[in-house]
Image (tube, rainbow, N blue to C red; front, side, top):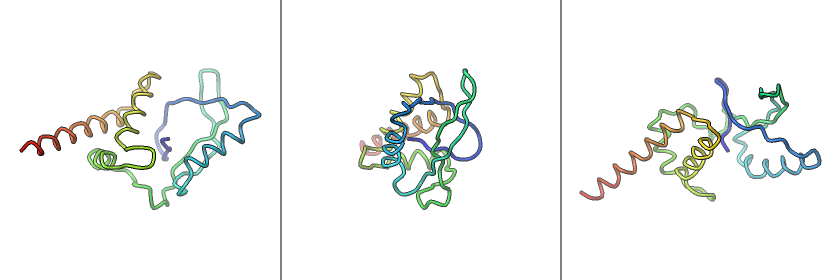
Length: 131
């Protein structure tokens, strides 16, 4: 999951949850994404081609010790290239996110630039090993 920070805007998908499963679904999201209290869930109104829709969004808590703030492209790439967690690596997570956005016809310039920089880092590391 990518959380939101204040400023700017975001394109994505709004999922309609079955009324009888809203609580259960939000509980699952909460258990998976809200550990460490990095995000807060906010009720928001999103614009869709069919008009405004009430939704929930996960917004970063800037006071969280896990909040990295606005990183440079290189800093973000280095961080994601090295990050590994219980669900995989930061590199895999980013690649999966970019791929799914592309499948939806969404191009996020910053995520693509970070992914390209990570690829460059991998090539640089391989080149150094060959020396």
